[in-house]
Length: 121
Length: 139
Image (cartoon, rainbow over all chains, first blue to last red; front, top):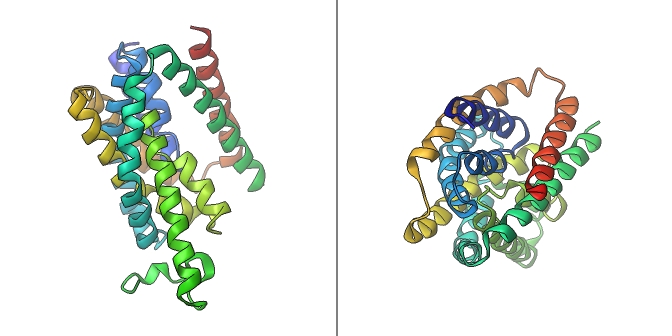
C-alpha cells in the first residue's frame, strides 16, 4: 500500500461516512494495517483520525437541527468508562484474534448497510 | 432536561412524566456503555451500534439517529484515544494521513447524499466491506 493509496482510501472513508454515518473507522483500520501498523496500533490511530471527521459531521448536521444534544452527551458520557474496558481487552488479546473479530465486524456492518438500503427502498 | 429545544421529540416521552423520562435516560446510558466498549475494542466510531439502537430502542428516524450518534462518537473516540495513548499505541502522523483527507471526503459525502442513488451505492459499499473481510480472514 502506497501513501497515495492511503490518502485515496482516507477520502473514500470520509465520503462514505458522510453518506452513511458509518465508514470512517471501518475503512481506516484496514488501510492502516495495510500500511504496516499492527491491528492494535491501527485501531488506536483510527480513533484519533475519526475525531476531526465526526466533529465536521456534527457541525454540518447541527445546521439542520438533527442533533439531539442531550442524548449525544448522555451516550458519550456513559461510553467513557466502557471505552477504557474495551481498549484494555483489545491490547490483551492476540493480534490474530483481534483481526479476525474485526473481519466479523466488517461482515456485520455490510449486512446492516444492505438492510438499511432495503428498508429505505 | 431543559435548554435543548431539539430534544423535545425525544422518545416521545416529553409529555408522559418523569418515570418514562428516566427510562429514556437509562436506555441512553446502556447504549453508551455498549457503544463505548465496542468503539474502543474495534477502533471504530461505534455508529454501527449507536444508529440502529437509537432507531430500534429510541424510535429515532435515520437522520437524527445518525446526527446524534456523531455527537456521541466525538466523546467516545476521544476517550478511546486517551486510553490507547497511555499504552503508546497512537500514531498521530498516520492518523493525519487518513484523517485529513477524510475531512474533505465527509463534506463531499454529505453533499453527494442528496444527488446520488444511495441505494445502489449501499450495496457497492457492503460488497467492498465483504471483500476486505474475506481478505482479512484468509490471511
